[in-house]
Length: 287
Image 1 (cartoon, helix red, strand yellow):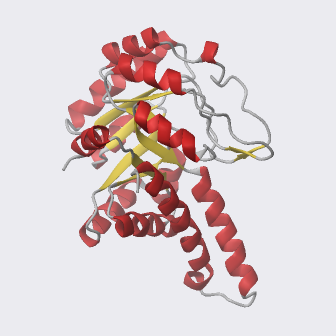
Image 2 (spheres, one colour):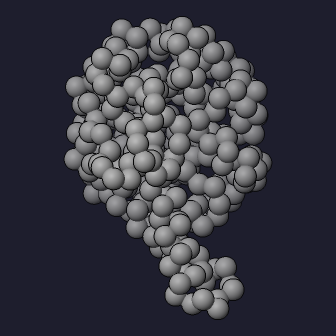
């Protein structure tokens, strides 16, 4: 099945696909082990910075290699891509999807740039899914000491149903990531904001295409469940993966201060990430 078919199937079944970001091999292995254990499809995401670190061709080759090893469907998304040139690069490389993110721009410019991104991507790779983003939710997958400035959080600042419909109609995106009270990153001292489920329903009805929830790290479990029922089809997790990786590395180093074998040190990171992935995938898939 293609990614488009997998997402359509998820919508019909009232579940959501898990999308997890990586920047190295340990996280990739942990995520795929978790998906394989539960026998559910998975999307691997790499932002511009992450794929610059790993390498675009290398990322594609890794995912293709794991597709042969694991029985679950594995897809690759170019997360948070900000330039048209980068869109063309990942389309040529064989990514299954790309998020073109011009969400910080005014709506009219966001529409213009995203429309161009869709055109360029589809010319190079007709099967690639192109995702657009509307409403700004911040840009950092990290521990936050305070809410990012200029984010769309209050209901008055969130995209309207009319804006969502206009965006989808004019850009012809396959997927839409709207701001619905979500933020990138995890707040250090207080819980992350709750999602505006009413807006999710309104945007789903207006968009008439699959909705993607970004900034999934730190969101309450119950919010995930009701958001999926309201129309969310894919959920992104990144910061939780990074936190689990760091805690696991620190634990591995502390356990044996004289250890120099990387695979022994990193085993704790792998298990920590896998635990996060299993927990999230159970919720997303209603298991």
